[in-house]
Length: 234
Image (cartoon, rainbow, N blue to C red):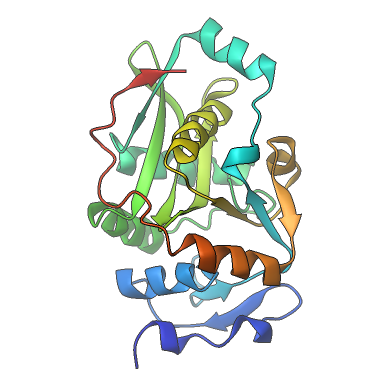
């Protein structure tokens, strides 16, 4: 039985979105999960928990419109951006800051869900060209960023962090500008939070999400490392 077949159909998820527990965080299983609209979320000491919530929080790159104040902030702070330059540093910052409300996907949780096993799993996905980081820099110092997983024409957002005002929002803005140019159809934000809604995210029924997901997965996307995309201002 392959990794995809190990998951129940998402219609069997609980009202909270919990679908399954157990398994592992191997690359084949994680990619199979994302392709079926499922993601892992658990805390240290728990078994691996797999989720598919209804409704689903998403961002549509083509519909995103950054606030004027963000553009002014980026210019004023002289922020520049890059992809995949310091993935491990970004995920470590996200783990440290997640419990302070800086998570892209799970800002309402308490404690960090980015365990050492989760870090290792996503660092492995990064090495395989699936997981990517966006870095925000000011005067040569890393001041914010985010990471997630790209499969087909979908970017599955995982977590973000900021050390100065607007650094994570600016990283997301940089990401969306590229995803739009690459014809990505969807950013999966997973679980709704006021922060995400303020950035333009919306809730859609899980059935609609899965339909859009299936369509977007037929696209070529942007496989492999994004490291050679140059550092750039916005």
